[in-house]
Image 1: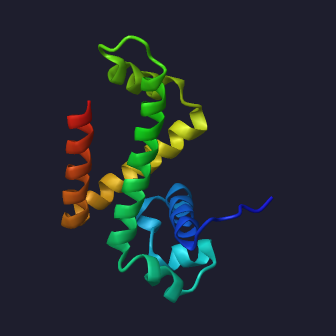
Image 2 (image 1 turned 90 degrees about the horizontal axis):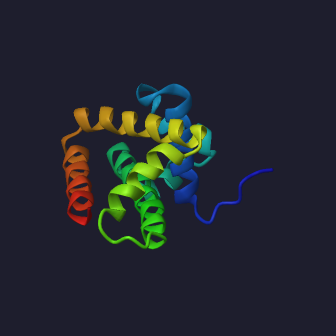
Length: 135
């Protein structure tokens, strides 16, 4: 069954993830994402001014997803001390293998992008600093 998207932006982000998972970070290009998402260049650039902006949005979406999953586990933990650490450990070990592989591949791709693009690296540092502050 085809996925129904709430927005073209989500469709583009999902397509970018698929390209990364299938072709690796070096295979990620605007044209590859356009083919995967079946959207026009205008549709792509309406949401993302650059490939760098796309990578930043992928990073933000991944971080938000992990944060949300950890927060759900924290909310269900009655022992206040160490609950964020327990939530993070549980996520790492209890995640289904396919989801863990997806996240691993995305993190590696984003690390590769961080090495090549200073603005994405700066954004990654801010995201990491926020996560550390919350922990």
